[in-house]
Image (cartoon, rainbow, N blue to C red; front, side, top):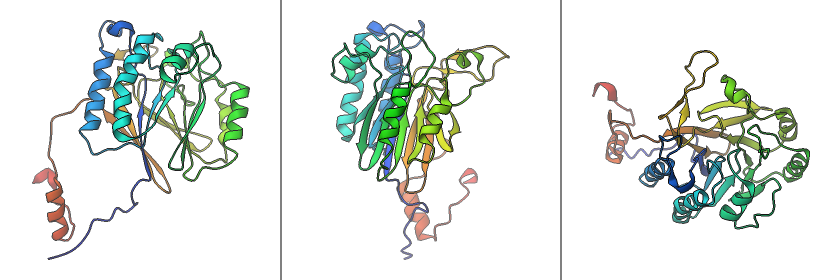
Length: 298
């Protein structure tokens, strides 16, 4: 019998990160905009994760975790995420968003004093991969900005490279958007962040806020925006319009390889099956020389 073995061309990822964003849990579990059960949306996505082969090394949530910063919303979020993180033995990186409240965020998610209202920045290292959370929020406003003190802190943190590089997580994406409403609340002075990360070991930037998945570059570094877990924005609207839609919600999987980082969008919904390939099928293909059949016509 042929003893071919399957060897991945790019090797295996060194790290896998689950990137969630914009959970928007509402006080007393009221429906978001009277239409969406944000808790149920998040639970459905986590169920999909648990039923998969994915084992994240970290879970990153890029802001707008509670819709109005309510204490019970953060408590429910931890009740949903803490068991998942414990199951996988991985840390959770909580990132502030413009809908969040710094004091309540600190108390309920970080177990810190709620009286501290300074920006919530942090560093988490997972097996040589550095995850930096940047607080891009401006209290009382919905646009984003990173102040000079934060940029100085970030410069210091990046002075020494991490063994597997760095991923930065923030709420407001440092990229353009075609939607006028979102242009009003985008990250301002993003060029200052670009100047800090240029030439460092930063390998990717994770963000949210837009409620749709998109990608771009900042100082040559890939930027990946995860769609919200609650609702998304329709990009195919008439000029000047904004339409939030109850569909398209999901998350991103971030696979870190030795020489690249791959960001993949994962929808919340489980769609109808077109075909399936089992491990036994793969073993049979290897025994036949490894050529995959035309599954569309099989």
